[in-house]
Image (cartoon, rainbow, N blue to C red):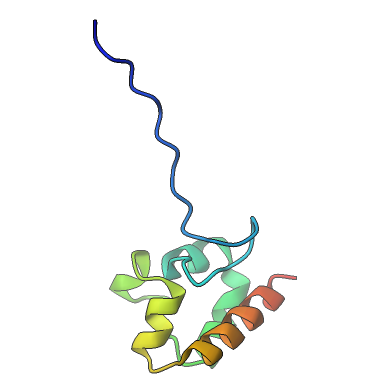
Length: 85
């Protein structure tokens, strides 16, 4: 008898309340799901809208790659989430 496979639950890239942007949200998800946060990203020098790595790189990874420290990343995330309101 073949073992029945259970449907795998999709992993969320965000590790915060539903509808919020988190450090683990991919940049591609931000652009697609939260376009109102894109101007905030651009104002912080994250021109990830057309970047090829945006589909798999997280907000935290992208910001760190652009020289942002943890405090600045927290500030960025706060501003991005405020833009959603």
